[in-house]
Image (cartoon, rainbow, N blue to C red; front, side, top):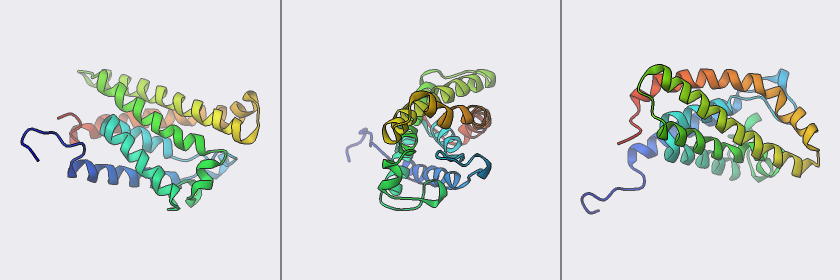
Amino acid sequence: MKEGKKTFITVQDMVLVAVFTALIAVCSWITIPAMAGQVPFTLQTFAVFVTAGVLGAKRGVLSVFVYILLGLIGVPVFAGFAGGLSVVAGPTGGYIVGFVFTALIVGAVMYVVKGKNETTKLIVSVIAMILGDLACFAVGTIWFMAVTGTNLAGSLALCVIPFIIPDLVKIIVAAIVVNRLKKYVQIFH
């Protein structure tokens, strides 16, 4: 490789992508049974928020892609230790695909709007994660409607409304975690 030429992904990037892909998988296995329905209540979104918040858009999206690819080939990384194309093609597959948009939005917003003090960083993190969550909800709900034939009101009642408060809690905790971890992981060279 020529000197001065930047590589797309370094060994450090690969290690971080692998670690955070594993974090997403482990968090997807943590399911709250009381909320069980067609859309499981897991810590997947929490892990995606943390991943994108710490790694940034490029490595965060790459981690989510690796997670989805592992699931597509049958590795049981999805909620309920599930894997395979049928999970992604099923009613909840849009939420899994929506994680890509979540990671992209969270990583990009946090990169563009860099805060100087801790309070600003925390506020930007929360806003970025809310925007990312909204994108995931939009993709997932449209997908759910297409696969199940449920109308918008029914889909929102099943797939969005029960998750608003839990997701806000996950966002607040994830924003705190991200702002504590970021200093240990160099995102911007």
